[in-house]
Length: 449
Image 1 (cartoon, rainbow, N blue to C red):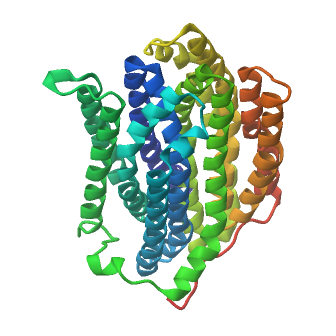
Image 2 (image 1 turned 90 degrees about the vertical axis):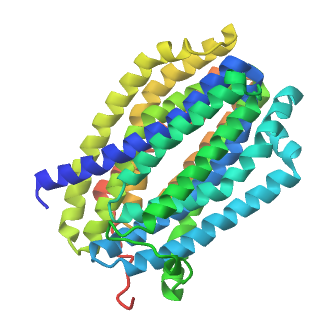
């Protein structure tokens, strides 16, 4: 495609995916603000539960990204049949994770929450939230996998529309049930959980109805979701297991970060929850760019236009850097008005403000290395590089150094926070070297399907 066509395709995909992610994160931000206004203990309880969910969500998203990696190459060859068969395998994988997590949090809720804090008041609030939120897991798994399948065919608007619907449904129910408005019972943290569960059920129904429609090129009929292909299943797991490790480790990394900060002070866990939610909101620009890059790179490889792949990669890197500078500046500016929305203690607000200032710098590095690794390199068929880099950087450097800083050196929460996020900066170097001078382009399709 020409430069004009490339930029039109890239930005049409990335903007829609960015907006979708912004709406999704806005739901979490609204939850945080409403719970923060109700009770700081409730906010911390929900934050602890959300760390459990985050690990699960990363695994399900990895199952979906496996479809995007392989399916985009098939879609580049104008083959929709293999995409459907890969989707069946991904659905079964995502549902398996949902069932396992549901069983774990149902059998051992107190033990799991105690990993994040020793404060029994926070644990009690978290258990109320978890008792309802666990029913969202199955619906989330189905929705995420089906959205990924549709993304292979560049059908991303439905995910945006669903997210907008979810935002209003969730926020509306939260407002009514957390505070007991309009004669409804005041449920506090349970009200937030009911809002999220209702929204998850609705979005799952919408995506299934849309996927079964006949108005697009990748229609899923009920029979399509029952049949696998052994060869494609083997290809899928051969590719996706590495991504499951990467995303699982990333989710676990965030959970461990919360554990470390939570065992340092109650103020730190609340401040981290607030700053992380706003950071994720601005991170949406990089997430949208990463997803668009994965689709475009995969489709270009599928078409056999290998000569264009590295040219596209160079163009994208400049876009990623620009996104990083813009999002970092926005995060720095927005931190003050956002913090005014919370009813927090002085120490919690001070920590949240410092965390956000640090994250405005971290955002620049993250916005380059994350889409290069997860969008270009992984989308090009080489997720092995990403998992190796994460194993070394997160589990070989960041977590050990942070544990020593927190519990041996007894450093401040701010110093520990810097240690926990250092990888977002130093991973830029290997990402740059690999994408510009390494070999990462791999064909993942087969001809006998």
